[in-house]
Length: 308
Image 1 (spheres, one colour):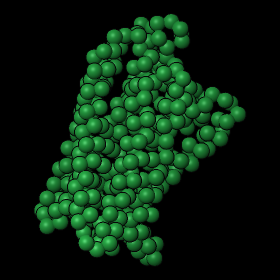
Image 2 (cartoon, rainbow, N blue to C red):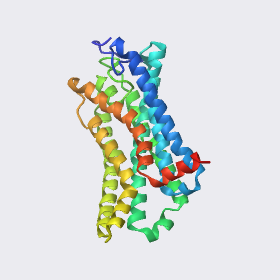
Image 3 (tube, rainbow, N blue to C red):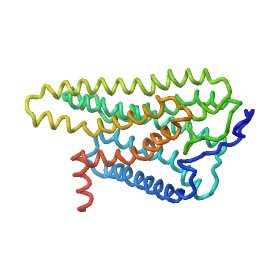
Image 4 (cartoon, helix red, strand yellow):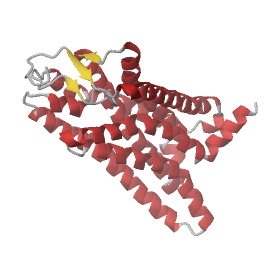
């Protein structure tokens, strides 16, 4: 089936992280540990924010949304590896593959926009503190979060319609550990010009470049404002309040750039797979760790709940 053009594909074969039999158990245990740590870390953030009234503000509201996205994104991608090991089957149906592409793409776009909303929150807190309580009212934050969730789930639908119309595939073997949109497009021998145009215009500019530019501009204003603060302690305190968010932004955009802006050639498929694994496994674990270790409010809330 690898070498023959297919008119229809009813299932895909997922190669996984490695096809070496001796390391399958190790991979399963490592992925299971990563997934449990992701669930534990992000659920801890969610519970802390919900239970501690000191954290009931816009910054931690968006952090809760980010934790939900991380849990969902890890579940959508890493469950393939766990199921493949437990069942011994490397096949996924066409409909399951399409659903995985849809949800992973939606959650990735959601995370980028949610980080943009968090950067705007930091901009208002540092650059416009007198207007912060008016602009960043919880009512406005709820509306912004709902808009982000709705936009990211609706915006991916045109991609899915075009992918579903692909009728010819050079192979049904996906050299990845989940169904990724770029890998599926690469396998198709149908005309993908419309899909390529949509992907590199709307996805790149609307859901990637625009959030990046908005985040970048927010931090330009933030840095300019911080540099105007006369006391060194004041500058450090202002920078420290947004350092966690900035660290997460740099991590995510760096891995996504390596994952999607590099051409998917035969020689770098495993290289691309490595960045995908870091993005879907390591980043969701690092997010709660970064926000816990670098955020005094979260650490204080955790101490309060532990000492109860």
